[in-house]
Length: 378
Image 1 (cartoon, rainbow, N blue to C red):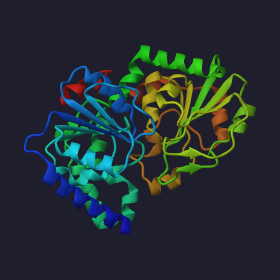
Image 2 (image 1 turned 90 degrees about the vertical axis):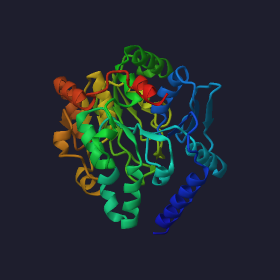
Image 3 (image 1 turned 30 degrees about the vertical axis):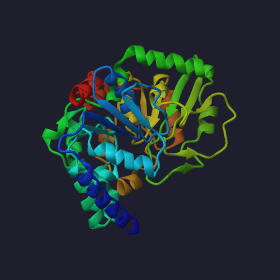
Image 4 (image 1 turned 60 degrees about the horizontal axis):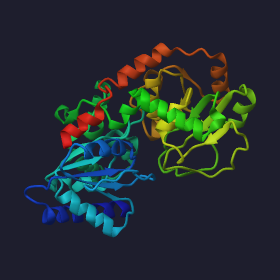
């Protein structure tokens, strides 16, 4: 209750700030605010070659943007001074590009600039936004704040018909707010040259992967879990039961820190917060995940996916799913490490299902999402 009251006071303060500082005619300025970096990092370098507008980037991710330009201002250190500067930039921006939920959205109706939500997932197994089951535990005042915040989004980048319906339910937006092209980060997965470059980089950086069949485990983020001391998959068992030419990568969500011992085996790599998901997936032969949106991206490679929802019944209750799990996923479902090993050893994957899955969720993504976004905001 105290936290919610603090947020309400924050939104009230920001409303007043925007009312005092906004201009009748916004400056020719584009503001990016990013938690996941990839959409911004793919868009900004190309945008700078095509716009005369000033571009300001507030980077809330754990990775730096390795790009400089005379018209680009980057803020990576976040303190009160930076936050006030961000409020000033938002007050006079003509376009605002975000990839997550931010508290200032509750006051965004007092802005003159258009807000573009790129989001950070191509598709959705788990519910989010107004559909998230965790909202049931929040106060009516909190739910009202979320509804007002989502209502202030002008446009949502939408990669498919099915995801469009989910966005309408989750954000409370109408069809007119949907821009029917996908996230800029999706362009990578259909760009053969970029994928090959990423794969070559990974082999150079981790020569122990050369010639190996690479299995990657990427579990989704669990709410309020920021430190993990034990994985929910028995990697030691996989190492002893799978052939020597199989290597295992695990990459946890960027918000999660793995605190357990290191594996003293060159066939195991922990690349959490070390390599981008694009680099990791480029070298992956078999993906293991649960409710993570990486499955929608990896499907572009037409390679096997094993779904491992070890906490399915609990997850249905606490977070909620966008449909019946067995109907949402494709391929084979495992409920234990033994199941995973058996599926891999059988090597009986139906890749035609992966193709259908890919087309369903990447319907509007044709490899030019970045350019389409630039044309909208520049």
